[in-house]
Each structure stands twice: as structure tokens, then as C-alpha cells.
Image 1 (cartoon, protein in one colour):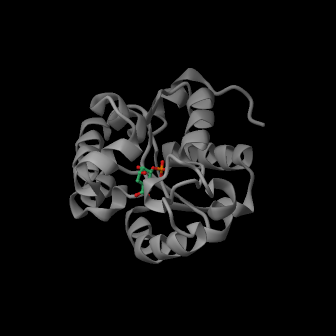
Image 2 (tube, protein in one colour):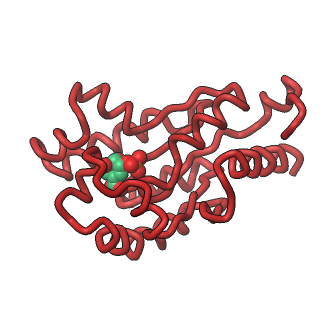
Length: 183
Ligand code: S3P
């Protein structure tokens, strides 16, 4: 565990954007970072749900994935660059315009988790429209094949999600952010 950080150090820390496949821990690690760094967390999925006034599965069902991606791009553009920790949805890297935004707002941190690891955690979750009525592991394997190169393209730091628990990852990220202040 770290000793409490000086106010000046906290002020100088850059604000990270978390990316990675659904269920890799972006929101929960984002919450931990938010507590430790005293920096607000903005979860793009929550922003979309709040603005749309309906759930993500409903947005997919009623208006289709493309409409969801429009809302996602809008939410990203509105919140990136703010002094907040940003937890993105797993598909944020699909659009080139989003990747361009991500790459111009470092540090982007990829929580890299395998389909096997994720499948065990989120199988049967009704809030995951992309996995609805499908074999979670097969679908996640397809998503990983499509998205890993895109996450890599945007990432300033890659963390192997399965190599550490959430608290260790949180501390690893804080160490990285502090190193960037000194660099
Ligand atoms: C999606 C991931 C979800 C959510 C939506 C689409 C995706 O977010 O944005 O269901 O395309 O992988 P999480 O990664 O936070 O689960």
C-alpha cells in the first residue's frame, strides 16, 4: 500500500482512460483509482444510459448497435480530456474517430484479459447484448480477435489482467501515473 499522496502530486497526475473487453474490470478498477486519486470516475456506459434514459440492452434492441455506437462516440468526445478517470465500453475502439481521440489523450490503459477469464465472470449476464443467446466463450474469442489489435493501437500501457488482482492493478497504474509525472 502507498502512503497518502501529496496534494501537488495528485494535481500533476494525468487522468487515465481504461479500455478492454467487457468484463475485464474497467469499472471496478476505475472506482478504486477514483477513490485513491480523489479523481471522479466517468463510466461511458453510465453516461449513455443516463442520457438515453434506457438500458444498454434496450438501446441495442430498439435502435440497433449502430445507434449505440453513435451515442458512445458522442459520450467519448464529450468526456475525454476532462480531469476524470474514464472507463470506456469494450467496443469504443471500433470506430476510427474514437481511436484517434483516444490516442491523442494519453495515458490509455488496456486491461488485457483472455476470453476464458472473462467468460467465467460474465456468462449469463443479461446486460451484455453482444453475448445474448450465444456461447459466451466463442463470441468473446471473436471479439478478442477483432479488438486486441485495436486496443493495442490505442494503448500507452498494457496490463495483463490475470497476472494481478484488482488492488494490485490499481497500485500498478498509480505507480505508472506517478512515473509519468517525473518523466
Ligand atoms: C460493449 C461493451 C459494454 C457496452 C455495450 C457494448 C462491447 O461495455 O458498452 O454492451 O461492444 O463490447 P463494458 O465493456 O463496460 O461491458
